[in-house]
Length: 280
Length: 284
Ligand SMILES: Nc1ncnc2c1ncn2[C@@H]1O[C@H](COP(=O)(O)OP(=O)(O)O)[C@@H](O)[C@H]1O
Ligand SMILES: [Mg+2]
Image (cartoon, rainbow over all chains, first blue to last red; front, side, top):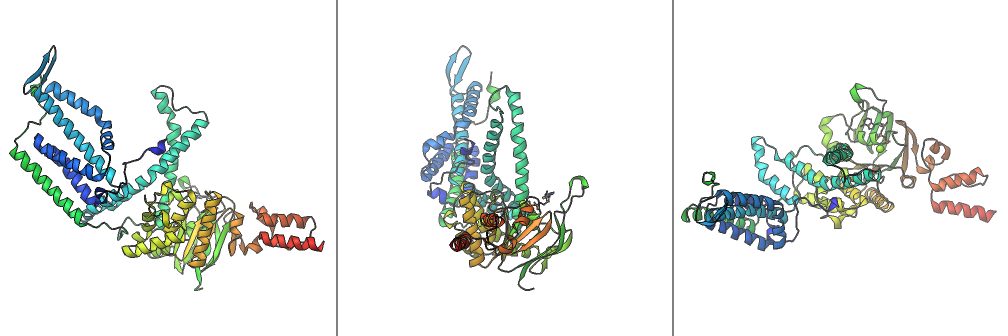
């Protein structure tokens, strides 16, 4: 059961988006996240939405899957919307009944925040849906490689990421095994109050930690045998290469930045601030 | 001398005990020489020092006294470290703990990448190494979805891609099912026959050891027997006394001999034993 968990879910669908250089994807994703915050009115936000829709359509990831990705933050969306509606009292009064006082400003503000949060999540999940962990690591590695000039060796970070990705399934399998082993000895992980249950995790984590440390030692030997020296003078078999479409996407990303800025200026400032002072 | 790839000279090694406690040596006064192109099996009961020999063979650990030479380079000399590790590769028992990447071919490329080899040359080596161990069609798979035997062959490919002259394998088949064992054994033989790589492997399976040109037996940190399988298994009582099994054929021949049946001294292969038995029956 635990084995079915996939980390950083990736759907190998082979679309144009999947084939883009991870650096291009990292760039437009981070740009997008920033631009969503920069967008100060509904028109700029509409441009963001249009871009997100375009990327989703090109990626062939089913819309249902994308929407499912929002489920974990549903609660956050509901709470934020509630707060916006409860505290923002600008605009026309829509409902004024007993203690409930809802204004158009509150509704708009709630909608604005919901769209912003949803866009952030959708675009971040789209990055992991369309980029394999290996490709992502390669992309990060290449993006941050120049930092070595100012004394930050990103190679070690990507090595750690790769090893983590490599060992997560192994350790999950191990957890499954330990769980079964302890259950067959009569351990009960499913009942009792929270303290009892927390205590039951000790016989799970102690062997897991023990084995992880042993694995680390063996892995260190194996890496030494393969001449690992912290990544100095390392080459890459599948070196990343920026292709025409990657340049095009990067260009479009810049156009997108310009678009949002222009729309922000010409379509005026929508008051996107959380206005506590209007609260009763 | 020039055809010696690995040489142990009066090697003694001990691990550091907790809080400075001095442990008995894991390997004591061990001398041996492995020639280029040999296919050598190491036997010995648990804790006899076999894994320590594997770690000593390419400088993962260095002797407390005595010396280990790889193609004449002393493993104590840190300047030759990369060259030594490139010449003698070590494969360990648990394939899970040797694979570093999330895709088979990227894992195999790890060694050559660290050596700073040209990408096109790495690609050639990776493809070749995967073909030799019969894992080429799994090159884009995720390691954790492979069987134990497949993972172990990927680990072996990762070492071969560095084009070593000698491979030391520490119980590479211990965690595998019979099929996985057979595949790994087959891959090891191919390395030896087709690529001319010197293969030294540690095993607990006598059937595997019998396939080697030479068997070295260790007991309590010492080397006790060194010879062809025929020589080593000729003294069944001695082998058993060292806490080891003998191949079933040898055991049967020994039982018959103990019962006074005149059978050839060494019957290693099944065919061989059947022939000598047939001979006796015909005579009788
Ligand atoms: N990391 C270690 N620390 C301390 N003692 C060790 C360590 N590894 C092995 N030993 C000891 O060294 C001896 C030889 O071990 P090893 O070479 O692993 O034997 P084998 O592989 O033949 O089973 C054993 O007595 C073992 O307990
Ligand atoms: Mg061992």
